Image (tube, rainbow, N blue to C red; front, side, top):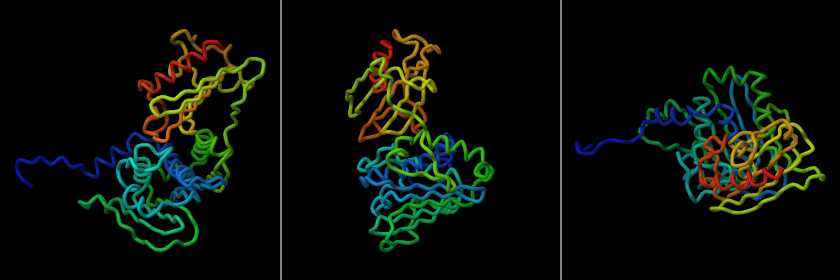
Length: 321
């Protein structure tokens, strides 16, 4: 290298450490579920498909029948550390979810997929890959379709903390609850998700309202995001507040804080006398990077102009209630 050129290339160790540090193991698993549901949407299925998750102290596996991944996408997109703008995603946002999820759990990864045209397999020995200068992965098997469309990710040599976590019934219950809430629309309409062979039941949440008070509605579009708001008196007293969905993925559940406008601009602070209030905000975009969710899809970036516009309208239909 020339003495007048400064080397600014990233190291794999730092890149991976940074990638996985701020995502919880539950959110990492949900990132993999997002990829499966993206497959369902991308293939425009109308019939129900299946996602199975199996985890224990000895390993992790997720399998889905949501259409598989084509070889071109595997070669140019799936394993790249960043999104490609030509790719079709609804829940995958920044092109990092799958990579940080698999690197977070263990050091031996097997990735298989079949799109009914071709089958491929990629084996990743993380520690060995770190030692190589190149950032590429290689197919360990590439051939004509096996006749069944699927994607399967297996992770072995789990890191010690996840051997304990994945063997815990408490964690299994917590993960099942998160999946039940986060994907309840997809669970009702599109996919069956099983955790260690146990079907996950969708979260009980009705978007219907009491007839005695007419609910308020507002629909509009802003900067490539379609917004639909509904709020009013709900027959269910449990979990009042605002529910925010991004591309039908539940991001905010029953919020009664300033995040959703309570206590600001004429909206009172939440009080238990408002326990029948429910508001539903559906934000949809063909380009998910325009949505105001954070990279882990666990919260809303409340300072973004798109959300400030949505928040203003949320407050407008909360005040009459």
